[in-house]
Length: 381
Length: 103
Image 1 (cartoon, each protein chain N blue to C red):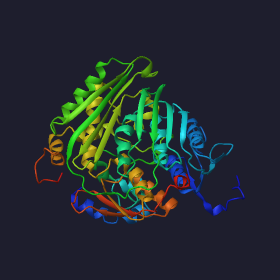
Image 2: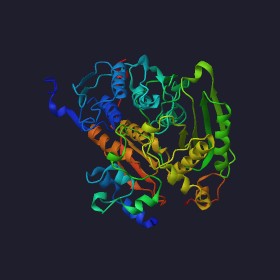
Image 3: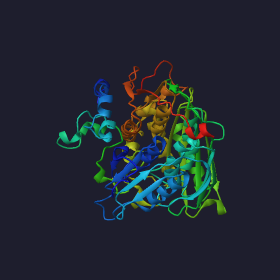
């Protein structure tokens, strides 16, 4: 498939496989650079893009103005020219192949750079074990990470209806304000954990399940601090979606407002979600609560000032920040984060300085000079 | 793996991240040379934490665009069932022992 003659070929960044698809779409839209991805599952029995990925591309088309997406006949490659972000009100039905979190992880970093305040109604699975953050995690952890950069007022996520995997039936509303500039981050003191909060949710199962989850998680966490409040959030009737399910999201907060989080959910799809057959996924409410608590301890032991699943988001906003040095203390970098750093270099030409922290805990200090990204859409408005 | 060893491996983190030699999974697991250079999967990195490194071929085909890390629940349970391990991170909490940042 030849590139359109209107754009020189050198402008197009090329990648292989469907891996890291969303972050490349986000970086493409924010940097204005075109994107071409080849070899998408070309060796697989079912070749090409999955339905949920097509659905994602439709969502990208919906929230941008002037994007063009050309997908090859076999679906193994596509070419994407990014458009602008007009903002405004949208509505989208997510594919049940992935949870709403999959789609929100793409929307959250884009929304603050729209021309007008952004809001969207999303329908689908609100939480799924394994791959994507649940809407509870995004509400209680992801959005507070945006606060670090001065995106505060008008940022919210409402969970209208819950819908567990595999059938979903949930509904959330995400609203974001627009920003002109991001604050420069300087976050190097992780402080000490002062409180733990959590939400145990259930749909279409006995409401007692949520209480059982809370009790078992507490049995592990109680030894550390007294300020633990885990509440139960039981959705009933029409608000509880189409499938039974339950889970727990935990968040710890330090004296310097550093957040760490974990979650564990019931799993109805053993084939698609458990990537590791040797690992037994907890299923009873008790095991699930204990597992979530252990994951939180693991996350806390990693250290750093930001949650490990949010390292990428903080890095992205550090790059987009003012032309000043931003600093942040991270725990061990995740594989996803390292790939994200490589992609950031390709799209924005920004290299991070990564140095081991002097306190000798395995933490790393990352710093970079922002590109001084200003919201052109807003400047014109 | 001793702590000093781990720090030694971290020294050239920037070179590793922006070099092409290692995959992100290998760097995150603390390796400094490609695991293909060893006879098999590196033994010490497998014992170190509950995250184990697997090549893309061992994932389901639909894995590959996810932010959450894959978790080995059995190793996680083993690690955090240990009382010493549980006590070792008390210093990270506000009610923990004072002046003991180490874990």
